[in-house]
Length: 452
Image (cartoon, rainbow, N blue to C red; front, side):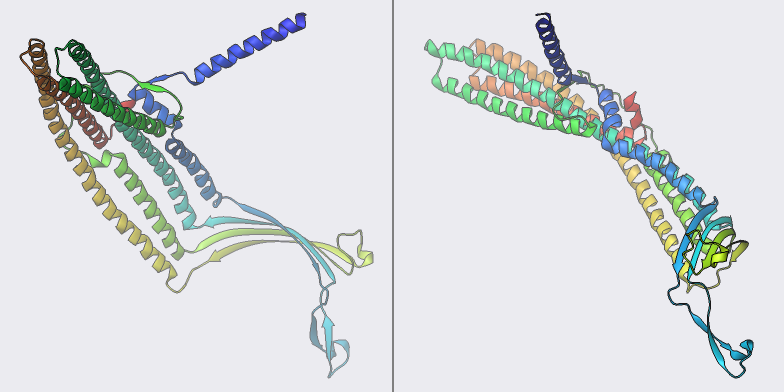
């Protein structure tokens, strides 16, 4: 009996725990722009791959550094000379003048085991490679920073698109609600013979059109929301809502731009340094190299299998030998191959120089465009804000006149549509301003400030 009750309690708490976990899994998350960007930097695959690139640069440095360290290898050979090579010797050696005797050299079995060491003493390409490897680390760090900025830019722009679409959706919902009230009033008047059927039909058509527009905005909002989740690396089925906020209009931008402080340009400069080292490593082909070598080997020779227990008495002999060498290699002529590689490396530098000039022009172009767009957006915002006020005033007066029989239904619907258009135009102006502001922040190299 007690066991049965215990099982029931366990089942009960298991169900409760499962419901709680499901509730947590599907809990709606409220995201601010800062939250969305932080989530993207931690979860978006592009950001994670950039961090892995920095990590991999350490392994690349270790690989290049290994060329400056001793190289030690062990080797072993087991040889069965099935047919020994014979050499022709004069018979005089054997007391048979005037004859030639074929004498086999070597043993049927030979086993060799050895250890070999090589140490670079001077190799200019190794030293250049170490410098290039350290610069590679800097390249991946700058690339990580650029990737993060690209993620931030994409997330911020899409975040405000979702935000503005939500505002437009609220506007159309409010207009639909107001139109539905008017329809309800006209329906009552029509039922009492105080309104025309054409007015009732007209308001119904208007409401259907508003609901259609609302559905389109809801679809657009859902698509943009899914895009935002994708951009930040969030599971698509995770419910989210954007944090309510007021879009502030406070533009600040410098008169000039220091392009060399921007990540995009710094990445090219680091790439230029890498190509310089690449050229130096190729030029190193003209320099001599000096290395130290050491070898120790142990050798067994005989007629029997050398890995058996055979002894010298059985015709198997073991001996060791060692050597130390100083190796100098002086390149003299390789068919101008090194010269061709050097010229190719210089060509890559020349191409990169053109890319740097083009990038500098593009960054200044984006900066000036962002300034112009911000200025124009502010003018548009002020104009649309004033237009919303006027449209609201016209609608209020038209509603009052319609209630007193001084305005037609057409006048009322046109006034409502005008207010809706004005609000949507104002929202669109805000979006264009925020996009231009993000472009300006990007132009100044301050996208990371959006995470503060």
